[in-house]
Length: 592
Image (cartoon, rainbow, N blue to C red):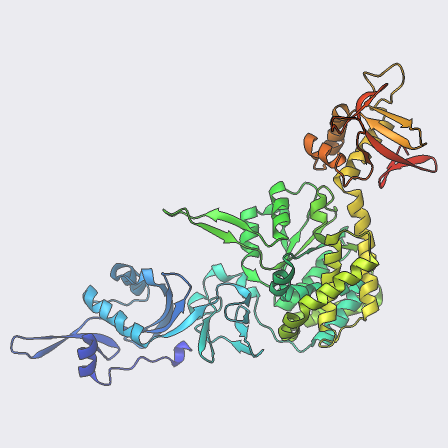
């Protein structure tokens, strides 16, 4: 509804309006009617304006909002957005004065004006978050929505969209908010149709970023249907872009996120509080957020945010109230992280990532040409690509669970030694392709997807293995032995020795350690290498856990895990495997 087309008319039937509401409109002003003792009417001017409630905005609270059009007696009009709590005589008078309007009547007169406005107003739902809106089954941009029939509906100047029997209010581009900087970021998510389709866009993206581009395209599809994915499997992995400066990490992400209608420089992970991170990520649904510059010095609270976000849990904070209410900020969108340090200080973080390696600082002419055209199309608009993917929601909803289950079985059979979490991540990426391969024109084939997944899985599995807490422990001990800081047992140093290597009766090589004296050297190694160390008791539990196949439980009576050696004393025992001129303990090289 455009302001220049709004005209509040004078009362067609003043007598009826007086009877129903106690006032009428004439010459763009309100008049109240009273009567003399002999019942003669006296009409008194009570304002220099008139107004109309264009829409009652349902925001899900008791303090709803309204878009009110105020028309000065001169004919000039203004749209304002007012909370119900602001429609008290004193509060509302302040709003009126900002528009050179005055109400001369009594508070009772103003309440009657409000009553008539409310009788005549239409209702609309406030869209306070962008992206997928499940309650209405629409996808919201800052200035348009994709409705249930996959049609794009733009807002009018008041910020309203009428969709059959429903109305929606998108505040960012409403006339009443054009000077409100609170919506500055939201305005970046503007619908921009463009002229390119998914087939041509994905070909450019794949040509520009090759195997990483393949994963990026499929990750985008998963992100746009994140609510379906999360509902089915209960988790959602992150992308981690690893590489030095100038290898294309930022370009990869910017060009991917441009389908949402904006340029983004990302959010530096180390410059934001966890409260800010949670509020940001909970502000949109089924989109992608970009966090830059993860390092091994990243704040522990930010790392905790990453760990909990994987399971969809956000921060819960208290609200100032008498009933101890809390507000939650659930994670509802996908995330991409980048850094030139691998997140190896916490293996639990890396295990929640799909790792993409960026190592080239020089690019082929074909890659440069594709990237240049991709950037050009991004500037023209890529919303058409987004809409084409979103229009396949029904197919994803119908097929995802079955396809994912089948893929998980296939991947697990092909990768028998792969951790379950890694199996699930690969299966998710593959499912995005399998669900929509018959509906979208991908620039790659089934074998291309599987080969790419196999490559990145092999790389990440090796890194995960190296960064596991037990492997880091043995790496640290091996390092300290090579530096000469740990003493090997001989017949003269039983009390001061840290470790002993012996051969049992069956010819097996066994490592014995005095854990309490060795642990401080592990701790020192972690501090010097900025690695998050595991606590004394926790590390002992990991080393002696039944899942640690190198640990040799004590055969001696009493149920103790430590072994009482005749020469070395109380110790823990582990199996060593001879490899050429060095040993391996599990997957870690030892005494090399």
